[in-house]
Length: 225
Image 1 (cartoon, rainbow, N blue to C red):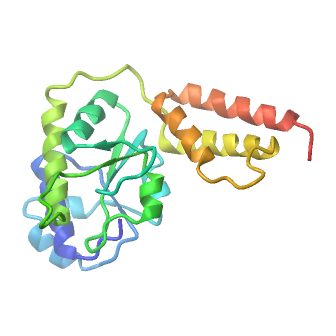
Image 2: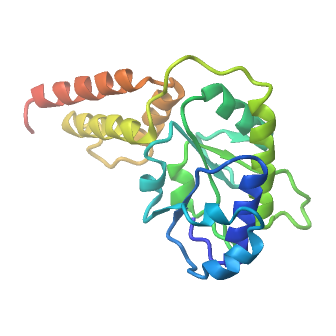
């Protein structure tokens, strides 16, 4: 998210190549100095040629079933996982995609992005210097992902519903709750909390479509206010 330092991008590419990762997206790119990035991306220059450039996090993670933000903040309703726990669950969720979201170098992930993620993860560091360099953090998660892929059996067969598909379910749920006047005094955390329950259920794409269709059908049958 919003990387500003080109050398960090190069080092991230190198770390990914070290552990055979190639799928990455850059949201709101804050630098265009790819020449400097290439000088650091030793033997991983090709990864700098093909990141997905996205304007928003929604766009970047639409095809992912699980979105994990890297932050030490505590947020109500979200699990806080160690890197190795993220890696094991990502392997168990395969072949569905997991997105691990890293913030910009100076301030990390903002509150809105943290709220948007399904769960959170942090690297346990010393209190005197809790922050890590962006590429160092990516390297550690990449290592744990590679390690888990070799020891964790694959999860249930078939893909899970993506974030984009689950967002449609959440929007249908929001429309129903509004039509039923459950949200008449403001949404607060209601839709997000209910949506989290659905996400933890690990729906299949078919189940997500069924939920969305059912919620929208009920909404249409409610009398207008």
